[in-house]
Image (tube, rainbow, N blue to C red; front, side):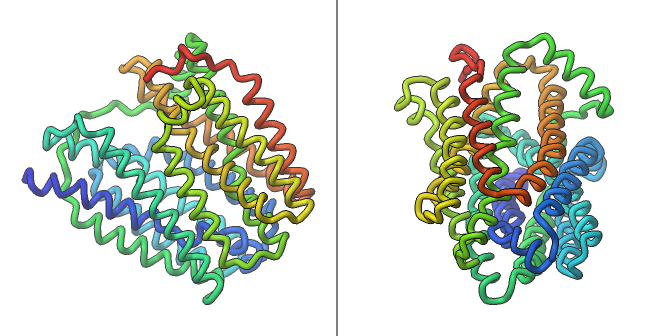
Length: 396
């Protein structure tokens, strides 16, 4: 039994790789606009719809994982994912896309509610929890490798087979993840956690936030800058399309930024030492992302492709890599008994912020892509400058 549980860890890496092999990632905007025939605003409405269901599914899917077990929650997620991509690639109709996003949100929520718990419970069963930081870091690295490889391969597929093929072929990657999940051995659950309602979580979480100035400051920094920088995921493909860059390069650029993100994720300490303090890195990562959004807008206006691509990579590299670092600092200020409640509250606020931001982003992009980039960049710079994060808040 112990040997089978030990094998769960390597199997989880394989699962994480295949479930993250998103061939659509580097060409998702052309998929919607060219094959799907919808506007950028409609794309963002779909994403707001997706985030809304992520919010709604957060608690029920955790309950499903507790009832079915982590293994079968992950198996169910893969099945739903396969159905979602087949529906998505069936007919280019907005309503069909809404069904696809609904199912995709359900699948992602099922994985979110079970993935890390499955790995941690496996480690606890074999008494290796002291290696959890290393194991979880490797687990997430396999996800990034999947995103990187998937984007690069997907752009080649789109160039040769058409953008619809990238969605269809993801049924194979999710199918491979399903096969790997079926080989898992269900570990004993570490503990039974009392489930709270949405209102209960928000009520308890807000109470703790109200009492903690540090949590409010760190969470606001993470959520505000995160919403601004994550916009680049949706805008960069429009930037490349506007300048007539061949679709085969979309995924390659996406892969380069994921590689940049991996480097930064593994260089926190070196960057903090280089800049002289942890606070300076928190400031710099937000400031450089804001500046690069402005640079990207200016380069797009003057069709200066090389610097525009560099700006895309730096916005994503620095902007996307801030989340795990700030989550680490947030955890240090949350009392252990309230940790799950506070983290759920933060996730809810972050999700709801994107539900609001995405439709606005769509309207802005359809109005003017160049101005949207510059406005977002200015907002990023302002938020980085007015941040009240202090060195003493950043505890390792």
